[in-house]
Image (tube, rainbow, N blue to C red; front, side, top):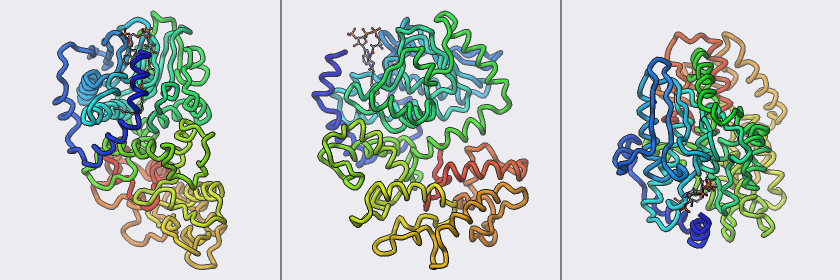
Length: 476
Ligand SMILES: CCCCC/C=C\CCC/C=C/CC(=O)SCCNC(=O)CCNC(=O)[C@H](O)C(C)(C)COP(=O)(O)OP(=O)(O)OC[C@H]1O[C@@H](n2cnc3c(N)ncnc32)[C@H](O)[C@@H]1OP(=O)(O)O
């Protein structure tokens, strides 16, 4: 193990990444995930065993790939195919993931896949990792991880991709995103999923230090939801699953609304159907990693010029910065308008972030400042076009807007400037009839207004990417 890691370090992950980056630029065909997965599954011995109980609608997926259920390309392929089959099986409503091995749930990504492989193989592997996460995190089934052993790195990702985690109460078992300790960096979507699970500060500490938590500590920070004696992990998962399945529609809207935010960030920048989510996940990840490569200080405006800022420290922060500030199609941080020395980065970063959150009104040209160049760098870039429009004027309106949105019978948003037939849900940024927020599950007139107001508000706040038609990009 240690040898593998040492060799990986010697080989250089950034080298692998740059190769991958080139590969990505040349472009991969966007084929259906199902097709591509089936094509590349050459393994004969099953690494996954699935039992679906048709009386309960609950499937148990057992990982059985000794010695440690490491996530190789073959393993991931088999995992995804099984997941996809269950997803398409309408009788299956719940999924429990566990391991047949003693002491180990999953050791995470197979280190051997990250060492000495061709760029093509690396690309396939990485795509499979993304597909595993997308399928799990985006599943319509209720999902529970029955963690009956250690679950580092990718194993932890798999666990936090589920709705609920039950872990064996054994302090020798550990779980966490420990990549930093290995000299590599957890991709931003690993980070997002962790943040969604344990919150910002715990995730920050966890990622910067590459922490592995014992089962009791994992429970303390909320990384797992419940500890039970080892021999009761599966039975408790089954009991818990019946509670989840008793919640009406639990695996539809509420489930999705929460997850859509994370998934949509992953898609940012997607403008055409040729861009599959995994394609973008791959690119964005590469971008974020590349941005912080020492010696390539393209983020000089972030203030990152000193050697005392360790990569992991910066990668974590830079990722957050890019996600927060990046406007698709814009030259990321330069769109902050920070071109003169009078504007310190922190000054701008702070303001722009607040502005984006405060002023973004879907369908409006909320943040035209992204194209500001020169002396108009002022508060007028918030969308105010005349000097009479002060910031407080706008802040006031936007506040009113948010409040008004929730008043039954006023869903037309006339004050946003919308006039005519576009007074509808198209103000969310949807422009074509095909864009009916399919992922919300809402499809027709059976949904009352208050129902929609509530949903739209959440969606707008959640999904609005200024200047982009975010919802239309959502293809999952
Ligand atoms: C495509 C290239 C892209 C490059 C991009 C670069 C960076 C991007 C982000 C990378 C993200 C990575 C996420 C990951 O998941 S990295 C993997 C991290 N995993 C770990 O750190 C786990 C390491 N393993 C352990 O801690 C332990 O093995 C254990 C799971 C706790 C089990 O312990 P134990 O029961 O004592 O077993 P052993 O340690 O003796 O191991 C038995 C056997 O298994 C081999 N092995 C263990 N882990 C892995 C692994 N992840 N991949 C492959 N092989 C693994 C270990 O070497 C032993 O083999 P031998 O018996 O042959 O010595």
